[in-house]
Length: 451
Image (spheres, rainbow, N blue to C red):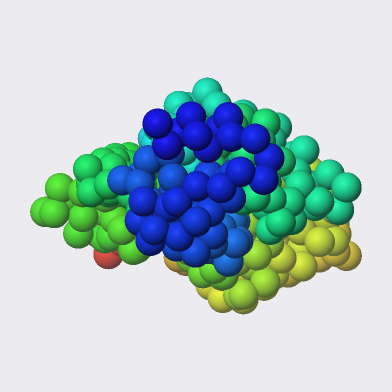
């Protein structure tokens, strides 16, 4: 047999190549046509350049897969993180390792047939040295790992060994007894292509499912965010929320968190209120102060007022009445009624500003005339005491009565009624009737706001 003649022929013995009829030495390959003498049907010896090309392609494919899988995993992770902050890393890891699992499956499938992705592209494969059979997965794994590591030692001498070796074997080939040939059967090509297509479809399906899940939850989360903003009485959020219901999904263009991070003062104010009240997010006064400041610095009156209140109360910021007065004044000058009343109170108490009852009455009146119940109560009290304004029990009764008819939080009802009765006791029946008529007309002209 040809095989026995090749393997067991003594050194220097000659044989005739069945392919080109040339007399060859004791080698697995013909010197002239590179035919694989043990089994002509298996192919011919692979050239050194083609093997080098396969090695380089393996590196390029590995790097390309790293970039593609990494970018997709990062994109999915960021998308999921925008909805579930604590699960972005989990999504990244699932997609990243899922993608590599698909690639590893393709790699192992090729390896079981004596190939790597680079060899597949170059149309070469490793075979059993003695008979051209497939070496099997175990031997190929040993060849591609430990074997190639050994070949790389001593400045890559093991790789160059294939250049002058009579059977064109590098050290990793000698370790597992393989040679590298041109030609791959069509059935194996179809198998590799089929597996590659299946792996790509599976990976694409997993990626799309992750995107779709994150997107749907993002819509729902956005709608919840907007709904909470609407619950806080914010008109823009209410209108956006209402517009979303006909489409049965979230508000894709009103993602409050993203809008706030882009610098939208409206979104920053709403996000600040959510952190302040703990609606939709954990309650966090420092985060509330952070977003209020962002919006306040852009001139948002509501944010300026709320930031001033935080400075006044010492929540989220160190208590600082001067800073409170600064931000409350900015909001008050824009017509913010609660800010006007709070600024008036600072002037009354002399906190953060010089005590000035006239200024206190001025700012409380501004807010009272805009319908602020607290300001009305404060202005009535100033008239009752005669601080900053001439003492006037009729005016005191008028403003306190208006406050009592409104939403007056933080003040005991019995205290209001007591002050109202005290003011009324200083009025004649005619004066009391007259001022009560003024109250009735005011309420007709300024109906209470529907919350």
